[in-house]
Image 1 (cartoon, rainbow, N blue to C red):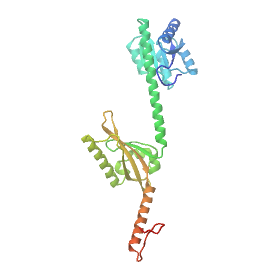
Image 2 (image 1 turned 135 degrees about the horizontal axis):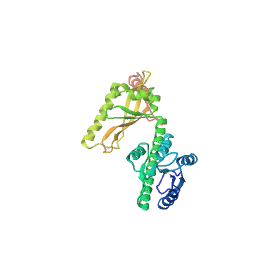
Image 3 (image 1 turned 90 degrees about the vertical axis):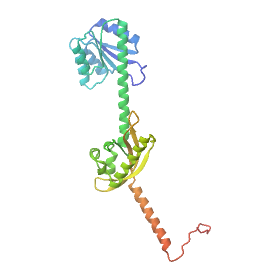
Image 4 (image 1 turned 180 degrees about the horizontal axis):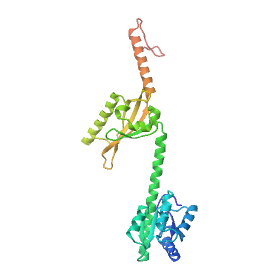
Length: 302
């Protein structure tokens, strides 16, 4: 099977028809007018045996065939979870056959007849379009899988809110941070996630961004960074640094919030400890009964 990529790549095609003369003619036309490598089969059962040993980019099948017709063949393919592009190419034009073919997952239904060159030109176009669409969907699915793998395995918490502050996505790192499962996290309101002061801060910052949006002065690339105190499942709280930007729809309007959060509780505690030490040292210096002078290595005092 050819890999996903440019349409110039050869398309491996399985062509199924019970008329031997038409099989040979179709193979010659398709390989001449399109970039195809065509394998032929004279029945659906034969095609099924070929598919068990070979992979193809698309299938073109007649409808009326002995043993198993084209739609029964299509149902068999789809029942196995095979989403390969499937085109019905037949002289039968009954409306109920067309509807049944489309309802069972056929990509196109093309009627035989007319001028051969024009007929096969249409078939070539439909095959190339169906394969191109399938490859694009496969590329998108692989891309989504890669991004999901990354999101599921990073240490930082990645999340998305809608315009009503309802959580629409959160990665598993959220459970490591706060103890709530993804399902539990998604069910929580903003007020249940964080302290009142932090909740008020989040709403205020979002309202400020909406106000900038209303005046046309909002920067769509701007990243907002702020800290929140959030509840954990065990009843404790943690401090979180949030890096946030607005999500936008196709018209550029704000449709939600995308954020990446990191637990900074230890850093906050270290900062508080240093602050207390600094306050203690200043208090000790200011209230000492003896004079305290600080100097450098040369003896120069500050």
